[in-house]
Length: 74
Image (cartoon, rainbow, N blue to C red; front, side, top):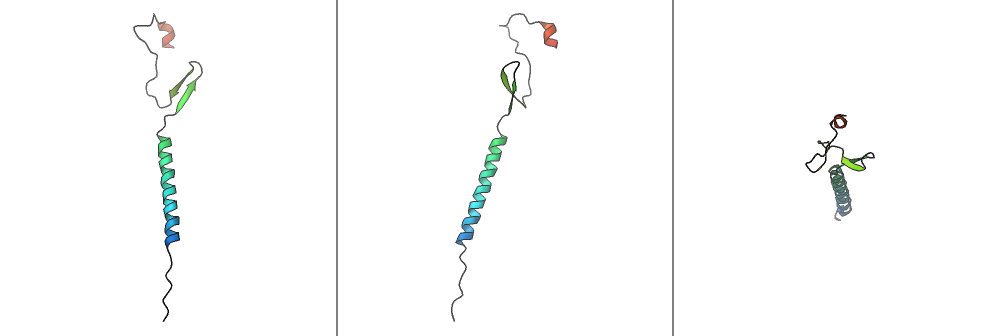
């Protein structure tokens, strides 16, 4: 009686491995991209500020001269 021919799963394993690696690479790229800080550019000041930056304000230090209080309240 002749032997039954066994199916070779090597090609299927290779394709499944390549798909798994591709999905893992895409997930890693999405994670890295989500961790990047996004900025918005303020033309009036000529600076970039992070969008999710919780502290926005004016830098006041003892080395600056007098600041106009009425204009700062605006």
